[in-house]
Length: 118
Image (cartoon, rainbow, N blue to C red; front, side):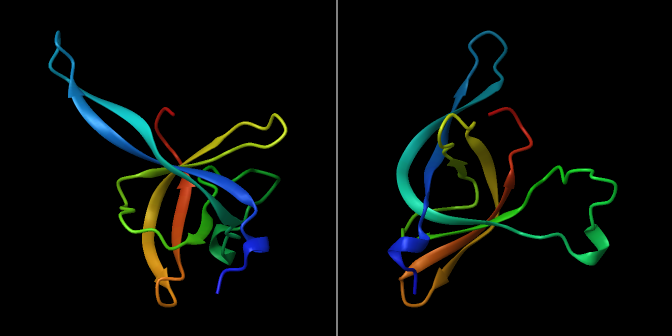
């Protein structure tokens, strides 16, 4: 069960709409907010085979995100972990989930830093 005190980060769930460029007929994705919720964000430690050596940072920075149950979240959406006290926002893509926790008590997502432009 998720406790309110564990949900300590603000997370914005975003979905996209697709439009076409009138000049080149290319696809343009526009991200827009769906909801802003409280969540628990935990960084996932690398396994032994992925050990970071010589202070090199992991590029993907995978994390586990848990939040109250919310229907309609799909893997083609993204999450923005909102920065606090001037820290930059962290834009993440969903790589696994959502997995239901309990009986609609919460959901869990596995995310990593977004590889494309925010």
